[in-house]
Amino acid sequence: DAGVTQSPTHLIKTRGQQVTLRCSPKSGHDTVSWYQQALGQGPQFIFQYYEEEERQRGNFPDRFSGHQFPNYSSELNVNALLLGDSALYLCASSLGLAGPDTQYFGPGTRLTVL
Amino acid sequence: GENVEQHPSTLSVQEGDSAVIKCTYSDSASNYFPWYKQELGKRPQLIIDIRSNVGEKKDQRIAVTLNKTAKHFSLHITETQPEDSAVYFCAALRGKELTGGGNKLTFGTGTQLKVEL
Image: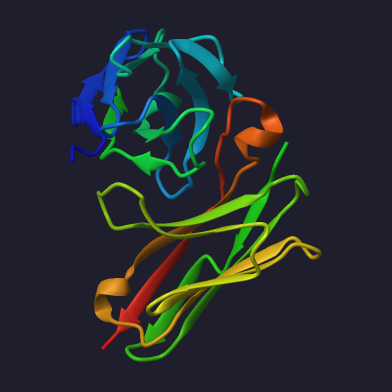
């Protein structure tokens, strides 16, 4: 049973650049949520995708955008990177409307912005 | 929106002792409360969860209690072992049956648990 996977593991970018992070949900799951975890902090909700649509969004600027594909995998895009975007980006998968609220996390992508 | 407060921020116990971590939440409509363990450089791992229609849940050495009236929930670890050392996060969520769709987790700020030999 495949768990949640993310790529790449680490990424180094410079200010102003754009980045794309990828996530494949746990087998059987159809919903992907993205979280940002700054060093020493709890994860902060960015947005959630279900049926290829953004279903809910946290307090993040429009520079953060996403996409979900028909196979339920998802991408997180961040434009015009700022130093403050340096963080661990986690995706979590869960079941859709009929499933439990349990969310399972991937290993994360560590983004460093220089 | 939901706000979750967690304390203590650090907790040091002797091996074999018990550890208790406490959280409070602000949204009375929250109805699902998971706890995650995160080891250094690793993903948050779900260790136990509780729904608002239950007051207590146990799984071997781990238990969670929920007081809906006071909007408090706590994690209890008994007979602590060195491998319990990690950061623990509580979280709260308003379930899909209430939102009609999205179900975001709101996390506490974490507790660094250190189990000393």
